Length: 308
Image: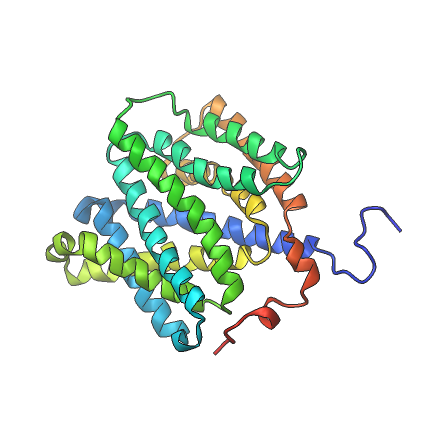
């Protein structure tokens, strides 16, 4: 038997890692296409208003489709869902506010410190730390944060988004393990929609018309309903270290989407950055399956709330 084969009696974790990687990549592609499709909406209601529309509609859609059995949630799980909702609203709105003040590349590089920090903190052993380090170098080359002015308020907002993104990764995995299906996500996105409604709703609602509301619904499906669902499913199959490292591929995907949809040709530093982050993503995919995945025959058998 090859030394690379799984131990007798234990499932091979590599298929779970590959499935989780595919889900994470699908999520990032949806996010970037959704952002590209939101440009017109940003112009009409502002970035915070667009975030409010997407989050509010996402909560409504998932409540209708999933119908979470909140009464069967354990109190600690319900609290975790609520906190995840606050964090989701925070990462969305803080990042949009940061982009209003500092260049998008700088904001993206600063925000990525969140998942990169998770990857570093949760990696075990020096060999696994190579992937976050490689990804971090690639993101720096992709976003070139040394360009542009240094607006301290914008930097602070982007760092706040980074903290929220790190918390989002940890909480999404926790909620995904505690609650079956997408029930936890339905609750958290409802909370996120309510938070954004309180903070942004009063100044956005007067700007809306039926056309904008309909566009908001379509964008909510593209971002965040589909990508957040994929991320929760991915985090049931990947360690937070591997998932945090895979998130470094998002700037590379954004660059490709920009090339295809916006005809933005990447420079040599960006190309080198893509090579580095793809290498990090491959390394994370090969080593990032969750240890728990090998010990459980099914996630559903260990969850406290059954599927509807």
